[in-house]
Length: 321
Image 1: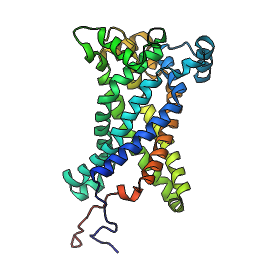
Image 2: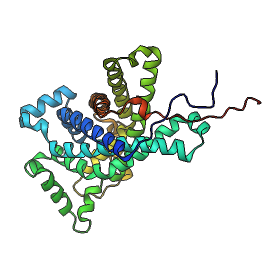
Image 3: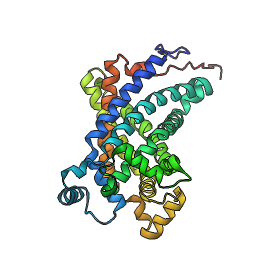
Image 4: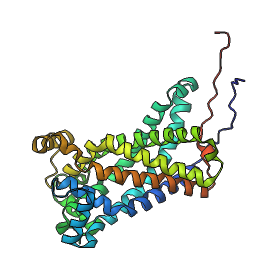
């Protein structure tokens, strides 16, 4: 039978709950990004030095042979701090914006009919907030990986000081030279990431509803759906990622997003926008799979279930039409 009342009571999310979501996201993102730092180093090198390596494994072997095993850990400080911030900010922001848009800005019927659009917009807004803190840290990470001879011994703070001192007029704003391209990349990536994860999870559960019953199988679904989400998101956002790396590496810092993209295409053709795509798909698939898995583990440990994040929207049916 049809009902105009929700079958489940929606749990209101207090500031404490959002804080726990942030902690869960921060721990999940930090752990996963730390584990794949070597792959991230190879991906960045393949983008900053196109044609130098014949794939991910050759890149890792060459870097290790020429610079030592420690070179695969370049940019570790910036990675840990940057993605701790990313997880703390993006996960609670997504939960907040998704609820706010569906409950406060749209009618229940419209929100249900456009659930994908709501998820995309919520993911985009959350990614904008995350980008504000991630940009300067990503600039330091790229410099450390692309030019270790200059930044290896400087550390995170030293690298940020060097970048800020390169332009007396801009100062610390120089750290945000890559903000437009990073924000474009993160908005695209973040929107697709959350939407693809939710839809992939729904598809798996629709085929095997029994997977919801056990914690292990439910976490397995998060792992698989996260891998699908990460790979798909990386393909869609790859051009923006390539431009970000190119702009961040440019020591002059005078290139904008479109200028950087135009210069890349002139020098290496359109294919230059997709340098390192294979390694990035593997990288993103691994970290997003682990990210959602650990996020769900920590979230559950704090007593927040998946059902708590569901929304119950009341729809009134007019049976006279």
